[in-house]
Amino acid sequence: MHARSLSWLVRPTRPPWGLGIAVAALLIVVETFLVYPLRAIMTSFSPGMIYIVGVLVVSVVWGRWLGVATALASALAFAIFHVPPFGGLTVPDLQDVAGLAVFLIIAVATSALADLSRLRTVEAEESDLTAEMARLLLHADDLAAVLPAVARRIARSLELPDAAIHLAVVPDDDRHSAFALQAGAVRLGTLLVPVDVPERTAQRLRERVVPSLASLLQAGCERAATLGSLEAGRERLGRLAAEQAALGRVAKLVAYGGRPPEVFDAITTELHGLLGEPTAWLLRYETDGTVSVVSTNQPGLRSDDMRWPLHGTSIPALVRDTGRPVRIDSLQEEAAPIADLARRLGVRSSIGLPIVVEGRLWGMAAVTSTRPDPMPPDTEARVAGFVGLAAAAIADADSRAELAASRARLVAAADQARQRIERNLHDSALQHFLAVAMQLGAAQASLPPDQEQTKAELSRILRSLNTAVDSLREIARGIHPTLLAAGGLPPALKALARRSPVPVDLDLDLDTGPRMPPVVEIAAYHVVSEALTNAARHARASVVNVQVATRDGTLHLSIRDDGVGGADPHRGTGLTALQDRVEALGGNLAITSPAGGGTLLLATIPTAADHRAPE
Image 1: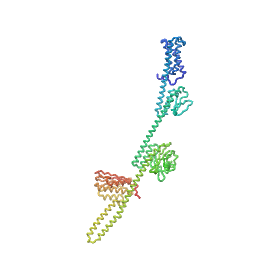
Image 2: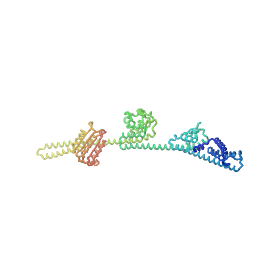
Image 3: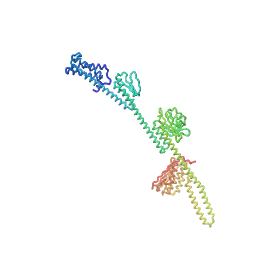
Image 4: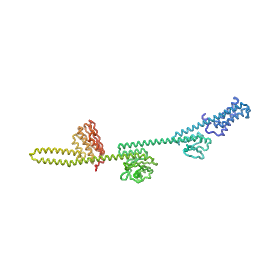
């Protein structure tokens, strides 16, 4: 209650002076009449102290000067009505003069103290106003949102009907006065107050409120700018971290030898995750003048949406013609037939970047957006990193494919050379040996009966020659089995099993369709032959289980023996050569041979791959 009363008395804006004079006069009259009853119970000058109350009230509300005037008027009234002789200004008694002087001194001092208290109270209220404005402006995330609250606080503090703050230059009008809010030469905004505010209020606004408000508004703007910069920095760092993580995932897939379709799908998925709404595409330029989709995250595409003819003003055509990134921010700039698909998908803008592999234009990466606004200007830079990874994956796949094709050609060439050697042995050397054997047999038969010793010698020579022929025939069969070329893999494997010194359990589950490529049959034959030879020479096995089957375009071989194990492909060239042969055809060969646990050899060879012989 006391605080509210003091706040009402000590207001920042003084009431009108005329009202102050009237209040002072009324208080003097009331106090003059109150002195009469007090004189009966108090000494002569003691009742006059009641005038101090009026001086105090007037000084607190209207200030020191009206308080001093009230003190003088109060002393005059006391002298006229209560100091003998009554009704005049004559004070014959020196004691009365001293009393009046003491009263004036006390009244003036009281007026000064009251005025000082008023000023201190006003300064405290202005400090509260400044603190409240600082709290609102310096802790706001959205500066414009708190300006109405700041304006209301100013209006309440200055007892204004209303006030408004704008972050723009607003001129005066017939209802409002405009106070510029600026820091130095920079205009920050405008404070609007009613046009009829008292001059003292306007002066206070100019001298105290507006400078504080401008400083706080500048600090608030700087804080908002700093927070915005920090937030933008955090967003950029977060986006950069997300991009690096996505690039790292794709780069890891490329480094581990991922197939191009896997890499392409990973790129479109990562791009869509980074860019948000835009759809990612990877396109390849075909030799027939069309462009085909190799990967996209756009669902619901028909088969005829996956390949388009190139048009002069389409994104793929412009990228092909210029070899540089191309941006189209309006669908109307694209021409049919790609525009038909774009309109059906709701595409509004698109960006394309060329994919260059070892100096040749392979295709392009594109992102499309259905939003009406163009895509951000840094979109090309964000896509470029993935374009480089796509080019690396394609180049790596091409290199591996060329290496595999080269190895396959070498294997095929070696098989052809072995076949020629086998054919030459069979058609030349063996036939010559057989002719010699026949001649020796004829010579032996033509000898007379008395040449028994010579016949015996010829018989020994003939047996040695037949043994040499059989050995040469085995060598020729090992170089390139004639039965494999004539009858295919099943009869050749059966012949191997019959000739093996170790019993063989052979299980064949081969397709009955067309024969496998010769290079595949030869590789499978040598894998089984080498495994059986090792089982007989080194493993001391009692049985060998051989399983051969074709599934899903792949030939599967499994050879297991129950021997001593311990086979190491690094200690000999036979298993290493088999492994090289199988891998050259795109297959895989694995050997498991623990000591005392037998040996298991597993091989897979693609049968649908291009294993053409060199021309």
